[in-house]
Length: 123
Image (cartoon, rainbow, N blue to C red; front, side):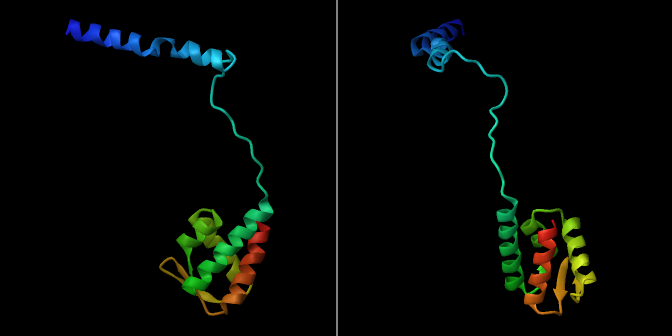
């Protein structure tokens, strides 16, 4: 067991791992930073809303209904928020039924997309 330990110590010395910290410190000007590096970026909310609108219109055209779970993912909100958005849409004149997590509308898909785009702009 002792011979194996000595072998490991010798391998560490031969590999140069012990001096690696010092070498890196010299290479990066000796500056030590604590914590995580923060990345700053700006988000253009208008572009995000346009992406959301495209996703939602594609979802509606594909399913010819609105699956609440997928709709929530498309608008990047909770399932409850997505369902509330559907209720707002119904309150503003879009007719349909909510069955088993899917809103099946009787209005045209263009009317539904138009109304949802208005609601997305309010987000």
